[in-house]
Structure formats: C-alpha cells, structure tokens
Amino acid sequence: MAEYITNELKEKMQKSIKVVENEIAGIRTGRASPSILQNVKVSYYGSIVPLNQIASITAPEPNCLVVHPWDANAFSEIEKAIKSSNIGLNPIKEHDKLRIPIPPLSQERRVELTKLVKKIGEDGKVALRNLRREAIEKVRAMKDEKKISEDDQLRIEKKIQEITDKFIKEIDDIISNKEKEILND
Image (tube, rainbow, N blue to C red; front, top):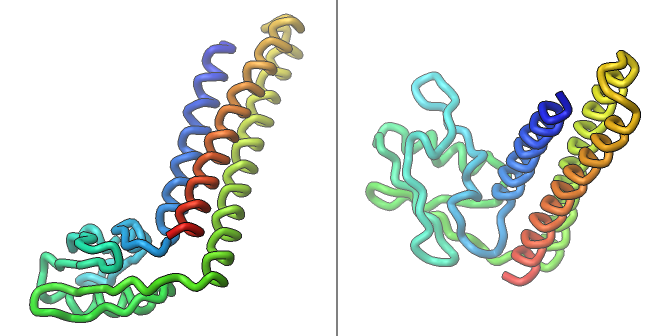
C-alpha cells in the first residue's frame, strides 16, 4: 500500500512538472522558438484549435519564425490569432506563409519575464507541496486505521519528503535554465 502511495505521488508530481515546463516553454526569449506560439489558439471553421494543429511552425533563423498554414483559407484567422495573443509579434504575409520577426527583448522586458518564470515555478512548487500534504494525510489515515505501524508511517513520510525535494529541485533547475536563457539571449 505504501508503494502505491509513493508511486501515485511520483506520477502526479511528474504531471505538475510537465505543466510548469509547458507554461515556461511559451515564454519567449530573445531567440525564435516554435514554442513561443504553442498557446496561440485559432478560430478554424467554427472551432478553436491550437495553431500547431493547422500549420507547421519553424525557426529558420534565430530572429524569425515561419508559419506554413496547411489550409490557405486559415491565413487571415492565423494572422489575427497571433496579433491578438499578447505576445507582441506581428506576422508578415508572404505568398504561402507567414513570416514573424522576433524583436530583441529590452532589459526591462527580460526582468518582467524572469519574474513571470519565477511565479510559474513557485505555483508549481505549491502544487507539489499540496500533493505531498495529500500523500501524508493518506499515510496518517492508514496508521489511524491500524493498517500500518508508526515506524512504517515515519518511513513512508520520509520517503514522501525525499520525492518532494527531488521534484522541487527539478522545478528550480527548470526555472534557473529559463532565466539564464531569457537574460543571456
């Protein structure tokens, strides 16, 4: 039973890490990356779909993205979605594609982005701590129901803390790498 709790905890924490990684991937640095457009949603034939489901996105140059819509009818909707996405990019229409120049970041904007990255990281850590609390509550309930001994309870709680520490360090590393990327590009 204790093994089940720790495995379930690892699984849930891994999902929390993925959420943090996905949110951070959408924050732009000074360099072009298709992940900048990952959160752009396009109105396409009455449905709202992610941009990457109706177009290919490439970064042929360090300061430019290229979007190739698979359906020529989606051009104007894609252009409108990118402009209204609040990421500060203005696509330029060229024949069968959209070219999106990536302007360099000002130092002020870099500082704002690092604060945002830290906030996302902190939210991720809060989620991990909540998962830890739930797991510990389950273990204590098992002890109260006399399913495990007090020694087992302490051993499992220690293991839960070790797992939590490992995942919190992983978030710290992700945040640190993204901050370096933002500040040094």
